Length: 349
Image (cartoon, rainbow, N blue to C red; front, side):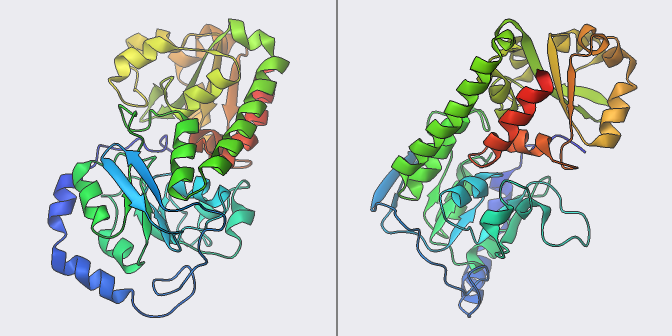
């Protein structure tokens, strides 16, 4: 399975042009019926404890949210998890991990760190990882009063289209490249949109304390360089130090492999050619893949000959299978990080 979000840059401008105003209007009208909170016409309780009105500055300008939202759609790949952690169940979300055919409920609502929070709620999938982009008509039919697109590669054209449906909050203003903002900033950004900035900061501080405790418990990590990678298209694909995976290993004390950042060209990962396998010849390697891809990587001679591999300094973390530690690391959210921190520190101890 490919590392998640490892998809071509979506042409949001082309998608926006393809969706006519008439089609968007039809979608809005389609949502005027009745139903449960997770259905187009249903009503959900307003976000409890929020402070409104609030204005959120982001990469595309500023958005004012005048009252507690009842119907939130998440267009960021993992924004739904942070929204959940703050007590709101989105009516729409991104299918980050493709759901196995015929499997219900959706795997993305069943991770150990979010399953109880979703309960019996079944959100509508408004975009799939690797697909052509968000389904604007479906989003409109859900009648959202807030759209959150923070952990997202959405561009101006996509933002403009979404903001015609409902107030939309894009990624943080300081984020230079999609997916490069610190998880802490994303969490607080989303919390502010929900009128819960103070609560968001408290939750960030709790996760940070857990990271600090792991770093304190393992001072040996501080002298080691680490990299997180996946086996992708028959190649070794490391993640940058600004990706959530890289930030997690540095958060527990490891030094990052910054040379990878230089050749990634602003992306959150890069695919190494055989002659550049030396970039992952570091003290500790974390591999995020499911079983079949892990086995394929182990058979790749250039990888097998790395000093860290020969020295047993590799942590193989299952992605969506088993305990899904890899998924928890890759998502890097308020609920997934506590689950991931203990597992990744234990694997390297």
